[in-house]
Length: 419
Image (cartoon, rainbow, N blue to C red; front, top):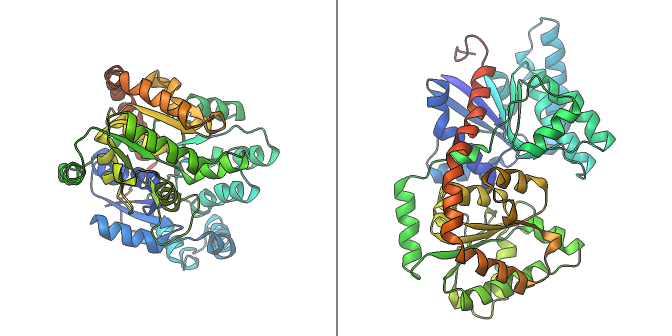
């Protein structure tokens, strides 16, 4: 039994992270050549335990909330690391469940999605460094699975990245921009370019059938699927853009003029929490409240599993989204899309498909009418866009397999032996 510990991804809240975890669960046994136990080291342990149970997945969860990580786990890992280097007994130091899980892992998969990016707060950059430093101190090989990284122009980001990234077993840039940034930083030996893990996530047929039936009970498809983002709303507010008002106007106009029923989903959801970067539900509820004709819109006001979200997107004639992994699901399901993004991470995935034109920056939003014109245009080009996606998708899926090659290559001799 090979043990893989995951970091940087919660199965609850952000369903992009959950998609990456699900992809590991779907593929690791075949890719690593035997039974695999996945242990999730999570900043959202309670929500993750509920979500894994709801999904019927047997995944143990160990808590590593940021405050506990900084004040307890890091000091203990430093002590354990010192003892380990001195060849003295060290595992007894790993009392917290997260440290025990990491110490027992054959390989650690960091699924952060995006890290070491200029413009992020210093505390976030420190977190990016510490989250992978802990398993390194415990002597565990760490693979930074496909994610966006860089640029590294700020001194703090550059220094932390140079301190940590060369020590990892593998670093998997998710696209050409991230790879270029890493090479400019001086990384080469441990770079393993890979497309997003979520390209390999599987959706069971019963899930597709259940979602298809729910949608058909409201209106016949195909649908115009909308997945707003609290992250983009926050960025828009800084620019004086009323994102909820614009999205509500867009949804009303699309429902009236496109001939497609509109479906709205929250691709990151915490049903009992307030608005935050991991929770789109309050934003979706605000957009829904502002609609002039809410009866024309199907709103999934709930926390859907990543497989269920992908099944909804599969029924779309077009997806309009600001969530990265909603974009990945559209590509995987050959659903045409329009992305309202906030970083290079969107374009570097769309570029290999020849679809960079489908991404616009949130700061380029001039109003609902301009977005609706773009939606109408893309709906007319639906067959063309679906054909383009279909031609390029196999290469993206194959490239995602590099993540599993990196994990397999990082396994130490005798991996799977009892620890």
